[in-house]
Amino acid sequence: MCERFAAAGCSVLSVSRSGARAPWWPESVQSTALELTAADTAQLRRALTGADVVVNAAAVVWRTTEASMRALHMTAVDQLIDAAGGPGARIVQLGSSYEYAPAAFGVSTKEDDPRSPTSLYGQSKRYGTEAVRRAARERRVEGVVLRVANVTGPGAGGNSLPGMVARQLAAGAAHLRLSPLTVWRDYVDVRDVIDAVLTAATAPAADVSGQVINIGGGAALPVRDLVNRLIELSGVGARIVEAADRPVLEPMPWQQLDISRARDLLGWRPARKLHDSLTDLLAAERRSHEEGAAA
Image 1 (cartoon, rainbow, N blue to C red):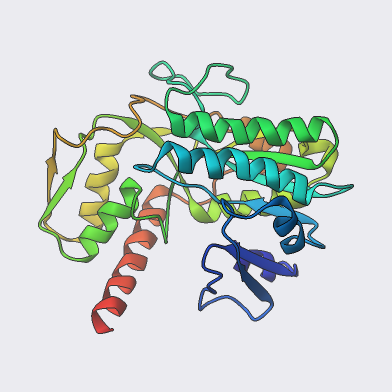
Image 2 (image 1 turned 90 degrees about the horizontal axis):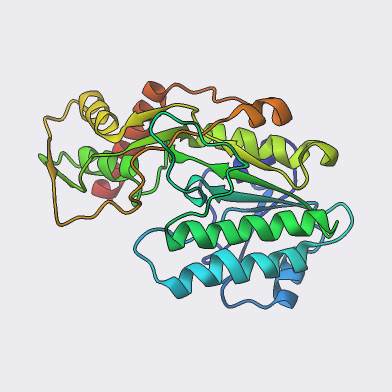
């Protein structure tokens, strides 16, 4: 995301816990270290001085504590709004498709679905969404929430199913020990997500401020098929071992996002096919594994 904003001619500041720079970033991308869960509003305001757009991609993921989720998904979002607020200031909040409650099989979930999510992760992320929307209604910020589906493509996190499987295949694993592969999910390439972020950051405020916009592939597939495709593309003869002692982290049998609002408001639709996304994910994990082995 930093690389793409810089390529679009923006002055970019990366704010992260470590303050580390990615080796491929251009020199125009600056970085600073800040622990969001420990910073106060004054520290955040100093870090964000002069920012026209703030993209909030900070989150904790599965197998973390309730306190961590509340600190980063709730308290930190409130502080971020206070710190970044002002005339013309825009916040692009990356939400999650797990902010929705389970849907009936075959049904596409729309942004106005009022039902509450079942998990603490989804509930805490939804709080952040509502905080940004409320601030937009009160004209404290120009706020837009992109509610993102499951992400694949190069760099997918090792705690996600695609990232976990690709990492094991890159290492030549003969057995993939996974949670039961019983659910259907909507997947979108990380590069398509970034396209949506750039568009949301620059779209007219009248079109997007206060909006929640689904960003996904628009089609669900069985996660078992996803894993089998990764195995086939890798050329590794790995066998799937579904471990009954590993719970399904988000017990939502089916999810498919309605992405028509993204098309109507942003002119956005996913551009990468799943085959290409998984191929690029595997290639990135192989490079990472080879570089690690060489080191």
